Length: 100
Image (cartoon, rainbow, N blue to C red; front, side):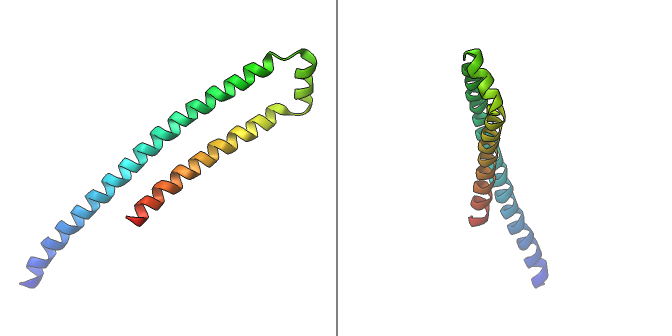
C-alpha cells in the first residue's frame, strides 16, 4: 500500500526536478552560445582592423614585422583570448548548475 503511494510521488518529484534542471541547462547553454558568438564576431573585427593597419605600413616596416613573426604572435594572442573566453563560459555555466 505504501509503495503504491510512494512510487508515483517519487516519479513526479523526479520529473519536476529534471525538467527544472534541463531548462536551466538549456538556458545556460543558449546564453553561452550567444555570448561566445558575439564576442567571436568582435574578435574577428579587431583582428581585421589590426591586419588592415599593418598592411598600411611601409614596406620595410612590414618586412620587419614578418621577420619578427608578428603574424604568429597575433595568432597566438587571438587564440589565447578565444580559448580563455570559452573556458570562462564553460566554467561559469557549470558552476551555476552545480551550486543550484
